[in-house]
Image 1: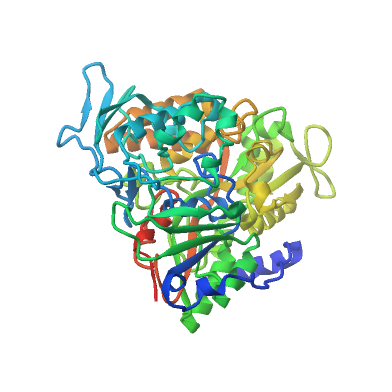
Image 2: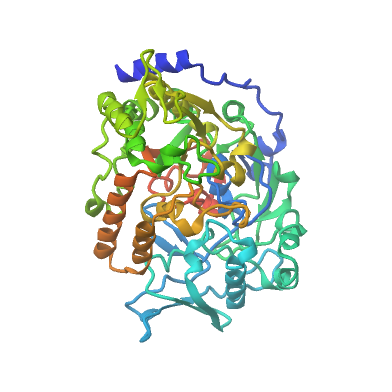
Length: 572
C-alpha cells in the first residue's frame, strides 16, 4: 500500500522528466567481438567528467568516478569482499602479533609496513618507501588538503627504514592506522613530482601530471585523457599482481543516467559504475535482466543517507532551524522514513537508517539504533514545531519566527536523490512548510562550494560509523580558506562530539571503541545535525559475457573498491 501511494505522490509532485535515452555512438570495434585488442576491451560508464587524478577530485563518491580509481591507482591496502583489509603494494598488514604495530613508551603508536619488492610506476621506475614518505608530505600540505585523507593526517612521522620498509608513527594510538587504501594515502611518484611540489601549490595541481601525463601503480596505465570524458587505459605489463587479462579499459562519461542505461542495454558500454543510477532505475534493470539474462545488477549495503542542516549563520535560512534541535526533530518526525525506504529499496536488505553503523561492523550491536525514537508522527512534529516557535496558521501554513511561512530549500547532493527530495519536500508541505526542491546537474553536484553553502538542508550519504563523523567534526569545516575541501559541509560545531571523535581515534580495542561510538550516536540523535533517511544501497551493473563484480562486489566496505580486482576482469 505504501509503495503504491508514494508512486502516485511522485507523479503528483512532478519529478524531473527523464532525458532522452538515445544511445551514445560508441567505439564499436572496442565493444564488439573483433580479434586482438578490441576483443579484450571493456567500456565502463560514469556520469561525471573526471577533472584530474588525485584525492581532491575523488573526494565525492557521486557519479561513479571514485569507484573506478583502482583501475589506475593503488594504495598500501585494499579490502576484500567481506570488508577485511588486505595488502596491495604493502606485502602484508602490520600487526601487534608480529611487533609491526607497537605502542611506544611515550604513548605514540608505530606501524611498520613491508612493501612488495616488485612494484613499479607506470613509467617503469621502481616504487620505494621514499615515495610513501613523499605522498604523506603531499597529503598533509595545508594549501592542498583533501577531505578524504584524515587518517594519514594523524601521522606524526613517516620515515623510510630501507627501500622496502616504511614506518608510520602516530601521535596517539589510532583506531584507523591500518586503513591506508588509495583514498586515505594517495601514492605519488617522488621522482616526477618532487620538484614541482616545492613550488606554488596551486600551480602544482595544474601540471600535466594530474591529467594527461598521469602515472601511478594500478593495473592499467593512462594512454589518453580525453578531456576526462573518454579516458583510455591499457594493461600495464609490469603490474605487480600480474598482467591484467583485459588489453584496454575505457571510462566513458555519460552524464544522463537514462542515456547511460540505454547504452548499457544496447551493448555500447559493458558496465556502469556504482552510484550512477537511482534505486528505482536499479529495480527496473534488476527485474528486466532477471527475465532476459542480458546482464546482472549487483548491490551492497552502502553509506548512511541523511539530511544535513546548514549551521553557518551566514548561509542558514531559516536561522532558527540551526539553533533549535526541537525544530529539527519536528522535521524528522514529519517524514515517513519507512514508506520512503520501502518505495525506493524494495527487496533490498539492511536499509534501516535507525543506526549509522553497517551490519558488517563488529561495533553495530554495541551502538544499537539511536534514531529509532523518531518514528513517523505528524502530531508530535506539530508539537515540536510549536515548542520551537513555529505556529500553524488557519490556512495550514507553518509560520516562522519572522512571521512568514517557513521556507526550506531542500537540495539533492546529486541527481540520484531526486525522488527522495520530492518525497521529503511533500511530507514537509503536508505540515505547512514551503519546501523548495533543487536537484543539481552532475557538474554542480561535484562543486564543493555549492555543497557547503546550502541555505536550508541537503540530502547526502557519506560513509558510515566513525568514518561518517568527519562530516560533523568542527575542525573539518569546508570554507573558502581551505578551498571548500573540508568534510564538514554542514558547519556543525560541537566540542563534545569533537572530543568523542578524538577518543574514537585513540581507542584501539574494538569493544571500547564501540562504546565511544555509541556515545557519539546518542549525541547525534539528541542534537540532530543529521536527519537519517536510510542505509543506502550501492548498485553497479555488468553485461553478460563480462567476468567482473558478480563474485566480489557484495560486502565491500569503503569507497572505490569496485575496481580493486580490475586486473582479473575478462570479456568473452
